[in-house]
Image (cartoon, rainbow, N blue to C red; front, side, top):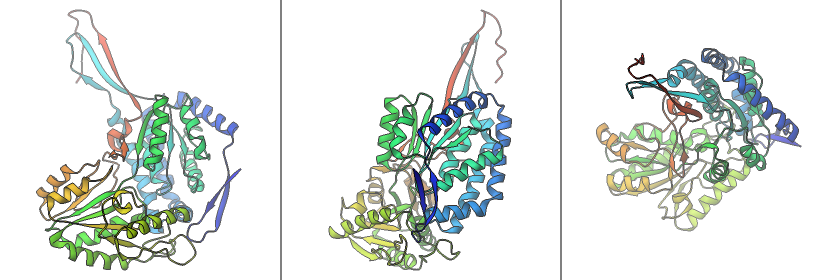
Amino acid sequence: MSIESVNPANGEVIDSYDETSPSQRENRLERATETYAEWRETPIQRRQVLLREAADVLRANAEEYATLMTEEMGKPIDQSRGEVEKCAWVCEYYAEHAASHLQDEVVSGEPEARTVVVHEPLGPILAIMPWNFPFWQVFRFAAPNLVAGNVGLLKHASNVPGCARAIEDVFREAGFPEGAFTSLLVGSDEIDDLIADERIAGVTLTGSDGAGRAVGETAGSELTKSVLELGGSDPFVVLEDAPMDETVETAVQARLLNSGQSCIAAKRFVVVEDVYDEFVDRFVEAMDEQVVGDPTDEGTDVGPQARPDLMDELHEQVEETLEVGGECRLGGEPIERDGAFYPPTVLTDVPEDAPADREELFGPVATVFRVPDEEAAIEKANDTRFGLGASVWTEDLERGERVARRFESGLAFVNELVKSDPRLPFGGIKDSGYGRELAGDGIREFLNTKTIWVQHAAGEETDMVE
């Protein structure tokens, strides 16, 4: 069987790829296991060198990879270029900092014992990755795990098979051994069997909370370590002293980045009553100015949704919200043209428990809520089953940090849109998942943190070096 890659901007088939057969899957799993046995013994300095080479490969082929992303999932081309550069950055970050993140920790304990905490790789790690950031989501998993001595197996989203193959080629061209990073073009119906395979030492998923529950259940039953980065319905809190020009400008960017298809996009705009009318008027005007069109055009702000069925699902959520009393201030109808295009949309007066209040809207749809004051804003921000990111806007930075500390989220930003950064832990709480990616926390998720206790004879010095 084959998997077709379809351009969401025009519905045309870009290419087709043969699915990984059962025998091929077995061969690749076995090769990954064999490679791991050698790769874990490779000095970390050598692994760091290869990761720097991967960054060079990414930059040398940036336009090719950016074009591929734009064609397969509709990301505006300038954002695709930015994604390639961010992947190079995460490779460089771990090439520089992995050794310090993984260094042995000598712990002062009993006077006649040497106690050391070490971090050792676990084995082949299965990554189940989404289509919305088809390179970045993979590299933020692959870079730390490969440099730490694990090997990776990728089950990518079925609508970006070209990206999956291209990423595999990046690591091969960089000089990583065969089997260090392997792409498996298989359907979601094979995920349970992969997780249950005794050779898989861990599994990480970025996707919906529904997919997370399924993967978490299977991983739990197999006692396989898992990390889940799931959906979000991030609040964007606007207080009465917010710097309005910057706030509105960033609000548009935070909602429409990647054509609105981001877990950490601002989705619920919680605005105190004193500035509500001003914010809504200016926000609607600014959203209306955004250019929707061909994602290969340099002037396009919003491209198509990644698949027609996803656009249909988004529109159904909007319609159901309007049916129960929500008001549409902008957009609200699919654009009549080839491709899966949905316009920037702003909803207000949304009742509690409407889809736009309780569900994640994965597209260019913003919901604006009016609240009386700061305390009510915090309450509304936390009134969600998700807990990925949140931001607050105020001229008073001490106040902003105080509010940020009260958000029930894995990430909290003051006067900045929520974003990931290789230097900082990334992940959520509640239905947004568990575990962390990036920084030191991320590289240690799929390692064995081992305690080594060496007992010396009574009176013998341990020669402990702090």
